[in-house]
Length: 392
Image 1 (tube, rainbow, N blue to C red):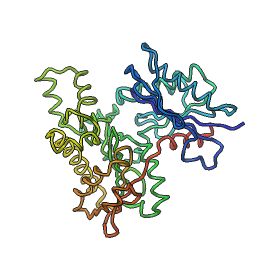
Image 2 (cartoon, rainbow, N blue to C red; image 1 turned 180 degrees about the vertical axis):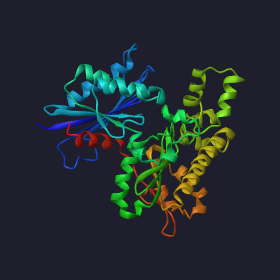
Image 3 (cartoon, rainbow, N blue to C red; image 1 turned 120 degrees about the vertical axis):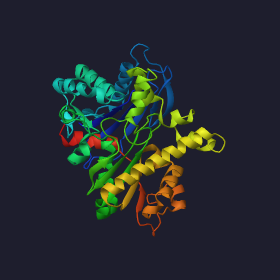
Image 4 (cartoon, one colour; image 1 turned 30 degrees about the horizontal axis):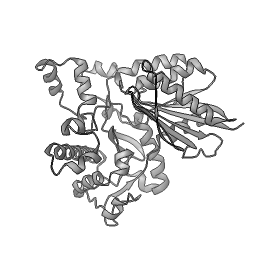
């Protein structure tokens, strides 16, 4: 009987899913079927599948997330036919300092992972809800948790430390880093494409609704912009990135914002959306910047933060040989890439404008001292591969 591996990537208002043929050796990079449920909890949910047009989806008003999972299960069972579901692999954002490798999830592991919800409140609860639902309803199907923090376990201790009292370190307050499944994929794909050229001083820019940079040496993480939480580092669509802690004290002590209000501000009302007042999406803001000063400032700050954090990572690496753009904005927004690379000209970055506009794999000129590439990420394949390697 043929076997499939299902990958679930659960966010607060969406669930991505992908089905891989487990019989392939090696495991195929592309799923045989995939999709996404958007708008969970909004009253305007939709179901997108790789082989069908998008369609509206009516979800239970009381338990929309549970209903979305039920919908995916129904669609998966219909898609499987006579095949068997060998495993379900989940992207789990936070594994703390304990989980540095994918793990088979049972009730004890699931209970343990709930302790990391405060560290990733936008993502952790929803992945764990999906795991818990399947554990109750289909305990016969192996489930594998794949952690976004795991790739960064190679960070040197000096990078993990926060300049807080030592007992904070002992309680688990440290830099963890995120987007690890994406960076793990790039560590494989760049080596395959570029060989030893990828083993030098590399910076990967994962630019999506969430965004971070990762500095790699020999394709291992040695520094990254996200730290204790997914709020750190770059300015993002709705998240602030690095922020003076004094500003938070001011908001709470002087403006009397409560903890929940501050959390909502930092996670949902900041970044490109907060500064522009228009949208978290650069594609919406670029046409407005000539006539809207806030849109212009939002984009200028967005690019400035990428350039500034890149400079810090270059200093850590002692130079730069390779810059790789990935994720939704990094892969598809030529204007963002152009502006970032222009500001990095002092490093010897020289962009090929035509190649960049075409979204070519290599977008730097032959004369550029830094090789600049675009590499589509593939977090789902990394998760499916992990489940397959565990023999699930």
